[in-house]
Image (cartoon, rainbow, N blue to C red):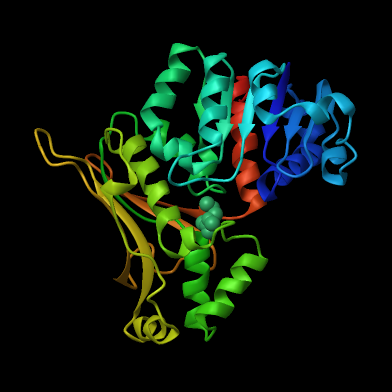
Length: 342
Ligand code: HSE
């Protein structure tokens, strides 16, 4: 079986997906009887490449795939609306306020009955229920493993995993950049030096303000609340957000001396039946004791603790930020959508 992928966005994540496709082509074919073909790629700076018969992902990485006259005239939306493909892999830059342009691309693909795998937090956080309904109406699938704790299979594990249980609340460390910076400050780095390292390593967003001010974490918490806690559609106004800009290396090392850690923690609870007030989500730096499951997360690690009515606490930890990790999440969603996973 073949699955033709249209890739939108060729930054760290898109390039990571191309690398994975190049590396794992034969292994995926052998394991899943699946040929993942790259039918098209749209970039912000080099235009588009389009060949429904398949583009060599190594040519995307080298740049050789770009420049053909026909594709050069196409826009990303032309490809989404008229291209021949089976899955849209959408990893354009997140806009936390509008979700655009990813939101329009995802709507257009789902409207054509094309399935979508996305790592773009904006559209999923802001239009979660609308997009899932659109997918259902059009017989398509919408998968978003790459939006939260990308290198850790969270939705695919905890979604089906908690069938029959009610998730009552979660607490999560969801931003790798902030965790990395807090850990570096603990060992003596200044705030600015820690940020600059996180940017060099490619963990921080294009606009690192969204990491530091807590908005990246807020979007992820909105996705989790709608996905696991039965929240209705939420907006950024439903989140009480405080980031890490007020943290100093002194405060971070004091927390360690007190036997715990400071973490930027997102939390939310399942809305009570019959409650009239809109449910709130919280994102803020908190001191937690050493016995808290999120206290010892190293480097860019993310973690989440779910409380459910039947299981008590269940904790997932793993990598969140990074091109290769997020590319993995897109690849797993593409394989899942193809129906050949086993
Ligand atoms: N900038 C984000 C982080 C990337 O540091 O977690 C993953 O969403």
